[in-house]
Image (cartoon, rainbow, N blue to C red; front, side):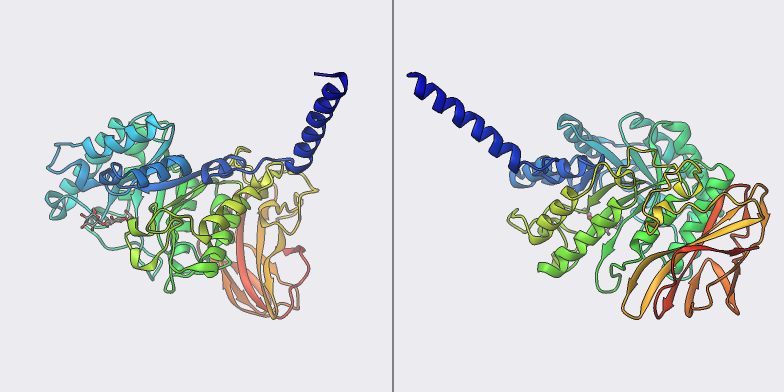
Length: 464
Ligand code: G2I
């Protein structure tokens, strides 16, 4: 090669290098869901049906796109204990082994549930049922000890409308059956994260959401071992995505648990569906304790409600608009933003951390940090969301250097609301609800409301 040709070749390499450097963004975009989610330290999972793993279209998409696996049915009570104290782990193990061989983690689903009980259990009651349930939890968690990332220890134990417990044979063994199951699971596998998992707990204003919230708060206060809350997030017209979903996730996170989206599917099609998927992903990314998202199946045809075409791949395995929208939203996460980085201690409640960075965005409810009060309590208002003619606000009430038993917060005079939760409103003053008046020294609780008209400025309110 002549000197001139060598020079031209070298110049071409330099120019090409510069072009590549100029077109690659600071952060390379992930081209699969799992890689895009991993950029902010999160996982992206799917439910797998074992009998479909021989379908190569199915298994190749599952392997390519997802890095957290939930057995859709194979680790449930009826599958793992078909006759009393005779356990069968063959189907569950098939899924676990496939996941492990392909470098994926597993969410165990589910140790105790009123549904999909083996027939021998369905007719049981009282202490015999309690013992059988605890034996099941123990034996299954021991079998998978050290192999699962998290367990849905108890599934769907709350009533759909009144905020109380669902009636079931397990509930009739005594209200403490849920905490008994969590304690047994912790003893059997101390390293698995232990989750409570439910549906219709996505909308912060729904009684069921508040019921679960109060149980988790009580568990944390009494030291019952719970590490995470799973939001199934099966959205459709009857149970629609609501923009207060982010408030739900961040409010649970503020109790000191991880939150996970565990069974996501959204009925619909086209841009409407894609847009809702985007919002769900953005809400998880905005809450640092939201550690991952699992969709409930691979292709629409694999869904438990395939008529609603609720998933990210069509019946042929093609990527839908919803897929692209999820991928783009995951890729847009800013890994340098501590609020989006779940590897920052997810159980650390920023509303209670005096070392929080005061330059954090004050409009971000995750970073609300009322000044350390010298008085009885302090209260800080943040605007979660606003729209023409209305807004949603959260107020964080923080106890001073002594614990308090009851609080009163004066709202700004401009506030006009008839939808307030976790507090009692009278004459512009909010007092605690029956269940959240006791706040430990330096600890906090929150209430929220939807206001009419324009939002007041964020800031401190009078607390007494
Ligand atoms: O219902 C949707 C999900 C709600 N949250 C808990 C999840 O565990 C639940 O999953 C679904 C599965 O996707 C279905 O596949 O749970 C259903 C049962 O509650 C599963 O349906 C069952 C059918 O009822 C059985 O007839 C069938 O043999 O699937 C089994 C295996 O295909």
